[in-house]
Structure formats: C-alpha cells, structure tokens
Length: 220
Ligand SMILES: Cc1cc2nc3c(=O)[nH]c(=O)nc-3n(C[C@H](O)[C@H](O)[C@H](O)COP(=O)(O)O)c2cc1C
Image (cartoon, rainbow, N blue to C red; front, side):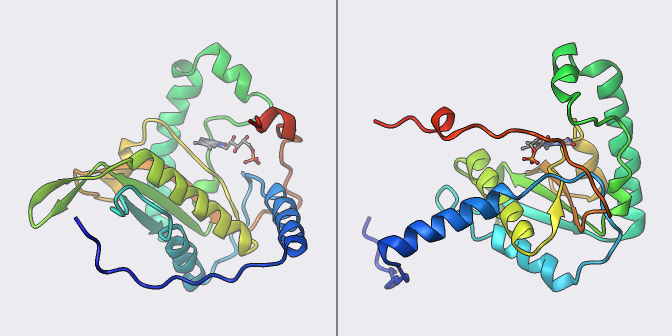
C-alpha cells in the first residue's frame, strides 16, 4: 500500500559542539528530576495541566493508535474518593500482599499505606491504557499498547519537570477502583496515577544513586 499523504518535515539541527553542549545540559536537567511524595496544595493553572498532557500525547505509538486517555482530576471530592480507595488497597498490600523482598526493596524510600498527597496535590493525572479501540461500535486492535503508553508517560513526566513542577509515579495496586470512580469505558485499564504539583517546603527525597554510564551502556 502506498502512502500518499506525506508532508515535508524540517528540523533545526546544531553544530557538533552545540549538540554536545545541549546533550550535556539536558542530561544535567533530567538528572535533577526526582519523584516527590510531599506536595504543597498550591494550584496549577489549568492550561499548564492541559499542555503537559498534550505534550504526553505527542508520543509515538504503535500504528499511531494513541492508545491512551488522561483523566485530569482537580475536584476535591473525587481526589478524596481516590485517596480512600487507594489507601484501602495499599493497606492490604503493605500488610499482607507484598512479599518480604518487596518490602525490603522499598524500605529506603520510607513509604507506607498512607497516601495524603492524593488529596493535597492540586491535580491527579490518571492515565488509562486503551487495550483496544472502539470505533463506530466496533472493536479495533491497538498495537504495542504497553510500549506506547509507557513512552507517553515518560513524555508526561518530562513535561512536568520542564514546567518546574513535580510528580509521583504512583501504582496503588490493584487500580480497578480508578475505573469505577472515573467511570471509564470497558476498553480502558488504569495504568498510572500521577499526582502533580509543587513540592512541599523542605521536601526530602531518598539519597539514591543512579546507574553509571558503564553499567547502563553496552557498546558494540
Ligand atoms: C512504574 C512505577 C511505579 C511506581 N510506583 C510507586 C508507588 O506506588 N509509590 C511510590 O512512592 N513511588 C513509586 N514509584 C517511584 C519510584 O519509587 C521512583 O521512581 C524511584 O525510587 C526512583 O526515584 P526517582 O524517580 O526520584 O529517580 C514508581 C515508579 C515507577 C516507574
């Protein structure tokens, strides 16, 4: 099949030195991103929240199916419902669902079943993956759904960081309660729950070490 709807694409490029400088600057900037678990309740302008979500939605996706929906929750009562339901699941997880190894692996972060940030953060972005598409009442296949939505969430976290905001990539498992509270259709499954906002004053984060270049990159 021949594609006949292509358009010219132009992109600004840089000299080699400029490219090196940009890559270093970007690495530093990305290295400064941290997951935050204590938020201020300072509001975020709605257009900022819309823009970061639309930046996420520029992500590549299998056959350009864009298999995602981003629910933007700022309503106090809905945030409260999500907190209560998430804490119920997390209580069970921390008390009897997580293995000893898992709890030991999480110990350095200092998390527990309590999730006050789900109400304090000004916005929750609940990402749903569309396991298939429903078009004109017909079921249509989506391709590489997990890969596509993972990339879109990466774009989202990058956009949040770029705007000087912080996020928590949260997975209060199982997350089916989000389908019910947000009344999502049958083809959508909750993927991530991401509180977004400004960090609370004097927020601490774990003093973690990221893998070194030698550990990450295998050259051939
Ligand atoms: C898929 C995924 C799920 C996560 N789930 C949780 C979570 O439920 N609760 C939490 O506090 N952090 C969660 N995190 C955040 C990680 O703990 C955090 O990214 C990691 O410790 C590295 O810290 P950094 O993001 O500051 O680099 C999750 C991260 C990912 C990618």
